[in-house]
Length: 160
Length: 121
Image (cartoon, rainbow over all chains, first blue to last red; front, side):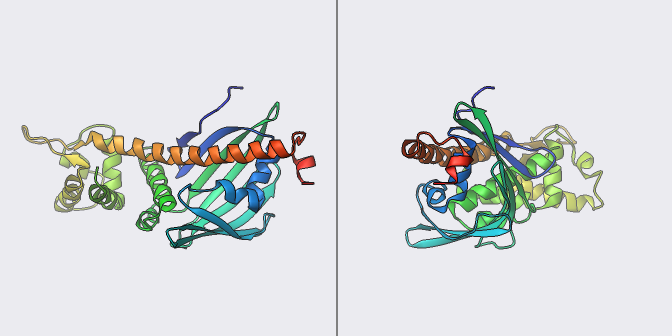
């Protein structure tokens, strides 16, 4: 199996879905912990221009999460539910609190590549095309990026 | 493209009919009559949608013999590539931070072989 050193991305032409794949030096177990241990999680979720603080964290099937990102005294909250948490996958929802009606359904897979390496595959399904403008209007880095992804998915969908 | 121009593009594409027009034009140029054909709306309403797309720089109607075809502007395709590339790049930056977290985990527990021992940490 070839190593995917840099993140690859794919917009599904049929549904508003974004898929990404990335390989890591680390076992699936370590990758899983980096996604479920709040102390580890807030070290990488970023963006780098913001400080992220986990406020609520119950990384179990049926649990919920909330983290707050801060930049220049401005706070941006994000929350969601851990729908399913297993060593090989996490299914969760993701909402920017500035636009509570917008929700993303994310599935993350942790695959063993052997030799201490693993592959992360993610799939993000957005709820509606209409909500992307609000993501954009939030004016926040992550929100804007989410919005771009939604628009990309939307246009890919329309072009199908 | 300026932020203002960008928001005009977004506003233009917020409408499902205009998105459909853009999707159909991505397959090739079309006349206004061809574009209007599948829609239950007056030709006047179709022209109104086209005007919004033209003002946003999404489509153009190059001068020439009638009927002038409607053409999708190449910059719109470029824009899409930029958007997805920007999204990808941000994910890559995030995953590079995750690389560092994993490297530190490996330093602390060089023998960690996954969830069995990992869960005991």
